[in-house]
Image (cartoon, rainbow, N blue to C red):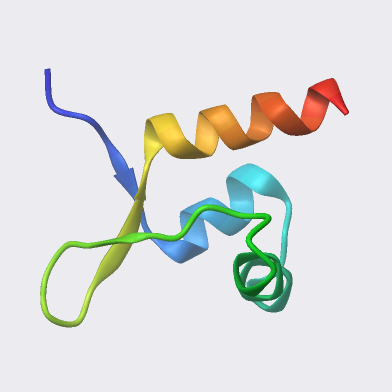
Length: 59
């Protein structure tokens, strides 16, 4: 089965985080980095976002 990938705007909606917060957390190592889809496009795998959300609920 092919895994779904989310672009930044979808990640913002799913997590409730702003663009700035996502990139700030990424620089601190507290949010997963996206994977490169094409030369210019990146996206986050659904499983990575789900795992991050689940870890946030536990804290």
